Length: 456
Image (cartoon, rainbow, N blue to C red; front, side, top):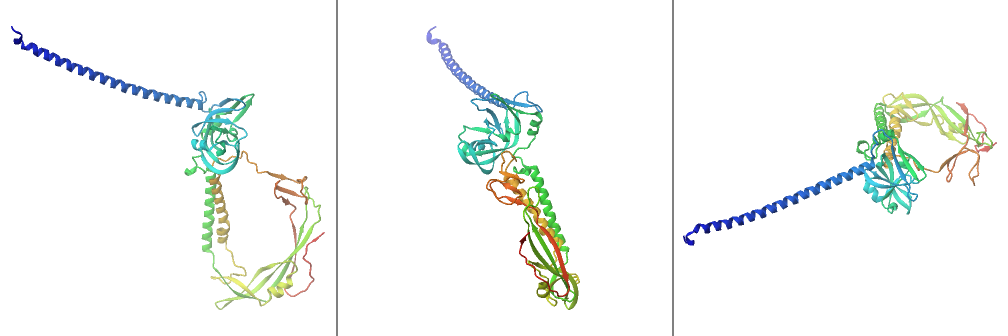
């Protein structure tokens, strides 16, 4: 058979070529899919490895801050070896890792402004500070938590200043932290120790940012004081208003002094002497006199045409010399006018002095006192701005109980209190007052005594 008659051979060859091309395309697609799968798998493996690395880092940091073997109720101990005379260690403030330089000469946990912002310390009132870079203005800082190894101290006072910015990010671990733990130095090894009970107590403290009712600056003790002062102030103002509303109403009118009035005079002798440290008089004494005069007054007044008679005692003042004749003849003679205060509902209830009711005393005297206490407590709580600490407080005050006096001092003996550089207050014996009296209902005359002071 001729070749042209084998047409099927040509068809088989064409089919074979077509099939080979299709298989090649399929192989390429398979290779691409496999490469994409490998790429995705590698990305997943890298992400997993990165996550495991971060978890490992976190566990390592946690292990450094709270070493194994330091559990609840166990004593925590941190040893720091001196390097070139400096004790440096790692720790954290408010959960943020920092590097500490132990400094027993620093009153607080002190840091630069950038570190304060980094750890989230709450800035308090401003103060001047002496730093390595000279005198600098800084601020008190309320720190929620300071940790060194397994040692933790919460609700602690710190400080910040721009003058500490050149310390390469180090924080001075000062006495506000060290006073809360035990510290021992043996050669070049410093050991910081915190007992288990102290650790439990510190862990249980609220942080500086967790104040009462969401107010970080308000401690529970201050809240109780403020609440008590507020309740007492409200009580006195309320009771004063209630009592005043129930008190009688008084009005004033003119009255006349009547026969039967008696005038009186009291003489007061004052004595002022210097005392030595044994409270014995050793310096000459100074004496002077004062005279108080008044009258037991019979008086008459009328209200809406109705006549009333009554009596009352009235002090008329203090004089430097005898005053009995003066008040009887000039100040308040018979027939002179006086102001009478009477009860509107019962005019027989009258007085020569304006009545001052108990409600007014409660409202104007007691209420403002506790209101002032409330305001002072609030201001102190707000502007103390953080944990209270007495470390480093020195007001330069001294107490001398007599004996030696500071150089350059001249004066009477006695007891003095106050700063050595400022005014001093003399505690001498109290002035002594002796009272004598004269009374009469009619005229009399007598000699005059000089009122000038004189020594004996």
